[in-house]
Length: 187
Image (cartoon, rainbow, N blue to C red):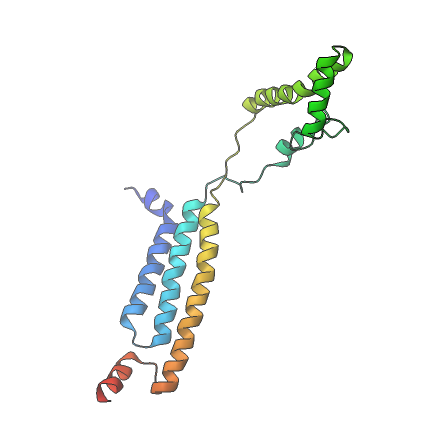
């Protein structure tokens, strides 16, 4: 493994450093508050690990860009491809137009056929245009979403741990684990 590869993975080195620091604080300290702080440092390293795994260089949030969304607005159709010109807005009006066209084959039938086929033409045209445009690179949002949930759970867990430490302090007069164990053995 070359030096460039090792340095290129700096985010993983940071994660490992934070994880081992948090783990050491939890194992080596007898003070309960310091243990909770160590758990929070360990938890932060896990957050960073998942978030960096979801990041893609040159990637963007998975949101439809305006140039793609606006491309659907041509020929009397909105972003969802539905007609906005007063007819063709609902399935009922399209069905009644098709029934009228079958009953009287005329210019009306031709206009209904064009109205039905125009979205297909737009899709084909956009497919031709999309092959000429650079593909959009998206970052994966799932790790970030999961970490938002984990942050909320972490805050709740930390709050509960601190509340228990306060109650232990009221009962034993200390938050040092070895002294608490000593008091339990004596009683």
